[in-house]
Length: 217
Figure 1 (cartoon, rainbow, N blue to C red):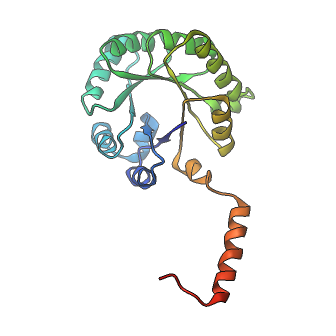
Figure 2: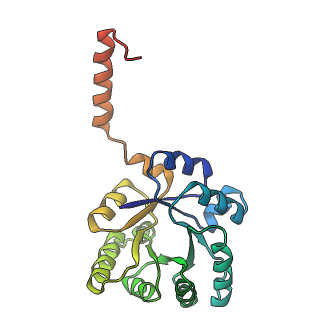
Figure 3: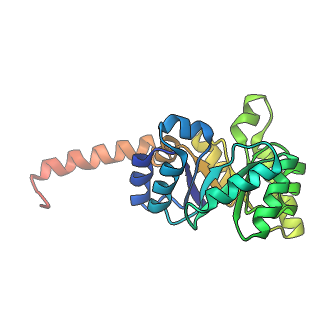
């Protein structure tokens, strides 16, 4: 499974990238706003840090404008994945951009039917939003499972990018079901390493080590 980090925070991306835990980055208008940076500037900086795909989202709502914005974003770097919403206009833009050889991430997916359309439009990634489905008492993991089954049935190449990840359990469940990628905030990725028994075991080892009076360095 590939790990994408869902942020436009340069320091957080650098920290995780240095550990080898970043296979790509996803951004959106809300994350750009939070960064307080110019979208072209911060996206270029992210692309210089990360070798994998960096999703940069269009803000237009009409297909022709989406395509124009997508082409401009694609010029930032070779690892840009143009992010478009799962609307008819977005699907039209996806088809044009993907036919031009551009990576496209179709976002805001909430149903298996939408995921089928994205795959047929040539999407590189489909981004089903787990947390937002959970928020309205639907099971986001059922959607991941349905998409996995359908894509496998028909040999679609589109990668399932589990998004709106809120908890470490979302990561585990996505991996178990077979999502190709998860994208999560830095805080969630860091929590994957946490376990009380690890903390307890380390505390015990260090206490015993102190009793030996030894030093390695």
